Image 1 (cartoon, rainbow, N blue to C red):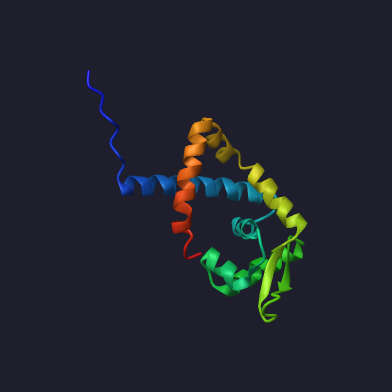
Image 2 (cartoon, rainbow, N blue to C red):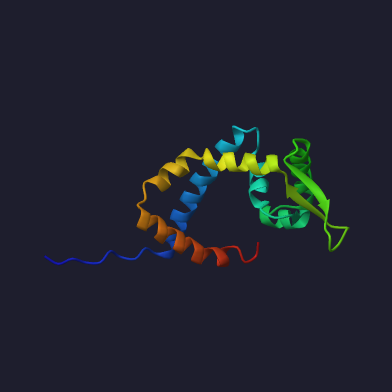
Length: 146
């Protein structure tokens, strides 16, 4: 009996799988965000704010016009989830900073992503470590323009 190694997937198969997983994760993220009265885009802004970011930087990360970010930040600011601060290097630039309440709400959103948690729970410790290492290798290339 001959054992053959599994055939490597094509790039198209990998892209389709990444897209399907990304879509499912985004749907789970959006549902958890909605439980906290956030749109998926508002939650995505909060998720990006691990450090102060200029409005233009947020627009680049969200792949949208800076004018759209203004409305999103206005609504988050009204809920005291973010605040605007002048950039210390250039006072004309306004940075967006997550408040403690904003950091707490995005932490809860991530905790409540039950479908994603369930999928990750299906992996063993070694599989989780392998997946993490592979994603870490892809991340710099995928985020280089962000």
